[in-house]
Structures are given as C-alpha cells and as structure tokens.
Length: 245
Image (cartoon, rainbow, N blue to C red; front, side):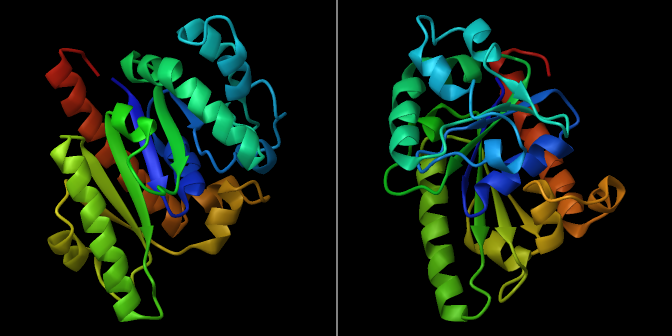
C-alpha cells in the first residue's frame, strides 16, 4: 500500500516537499476539489492529468493513470488536476471511486496526494489513504486562536483514529506552542515541526533558487524528517498487509 493523503494548510507545498524528500519512487497527485496548482507552479501543461483519467474508458487501471502522468523539470512525477475550482471539483468527484482504490493498492510508486483543506466530512481520499498527513499552521499572533485551531485538529485526529488510519501531524511554525506541547494535546501517531521558511516554500512552488541551498534550508530538513516518519508508517502498513516495502 502506498497512498499518502496530505490535507490542511499549505498542503500543496508540503506534498511537493515530501515528494522531493522521499527516498523512493513517488508520484505527487492533485485531488484538491478547490483546484490544482502544480501545472502553474512547476511549469507543466495542464493536460494530460486527472481529468483525462476520469474521462477515459478504463479509469480504474494503473496503465491509464500512469499514461497521464507528467514529469516536472525538477524530476518529480505529477498527476495534475484542473486549475479551476468548478472543473476540479467535478473531476475529483468523478475520478475518486475508480482511481483511489488503484493508487492505494499499488506497491510502487508511493503516491503523495494533495487533498487541500478539509471542509466538512472526511473525503474519499482520506478514507482510502494508507497514511494521512494533516498540515496545520499555528496562529502565531494569538494564543487563543492557536488553541482553538488545535482543538479542531485534535477532533480531526480523533476521527482518523476511530477509523484506524495512521496519521502524522505537521505543524507549521513554532509559536506560540512548541511541538512537544502540541503532541501531548493532539493524540496522534507523530507530530513533526515544520518551520515557517518563505524562501524555501517559494522555491518548492516554482521560484528559481539554488538546489544546494534548498536542500540545506530549514524547511527541507524538516520535510526530510517528515518523509522519514511517513516511510516508517508505510512500512508498518505494508508489513501488516503482507507486502514488502
């Protein structure tokens, strides 16, 4: 099993960063019903992508999915979604029933699926995922607002725990609460601190920048840590499922 859902704040940047940091073949796929960003960010055509998969005669096969994957200049494989929200919402809804079971079942590549912000019930992407990464940006200017955000985060973590979905929380920013305090409040498998690093985030989103500087940036160091935690969770899932990593 190899489907990792990334949902929450800055989910697209985090998905690309995980894809860049993972030490195994991976595919970054867009399942955000609010619209895709990766075609613009990473300068690839808007098609082929998820829309072509959904419209094909055999959307529920890996051969159809893989034939609509593009490779960005940075070396990351992408399955892009439409950029406009109305079209993206329709395409994600149409593709989910047939595409998500395939992505969850394949052993390789690992699929990092950007699900955007959750707006209500758990999405089909989350329910099909082998591991869920919840990204959450702290409200640095207000302890009360930050605490409210963590109450909602804890509620989401509980929903995932009830369904026995392995969950990793990535907390963006180190104020007003440190990661260890957050981990004691949010009952989940792991909490990884992600620094607020605008330069590195912009490079991941397509801005020009030195690759060596990006690798040494605080953001990429933390995303490498996050990728390691995800890999460990996937190994446990695959072991339980009887597969090898």
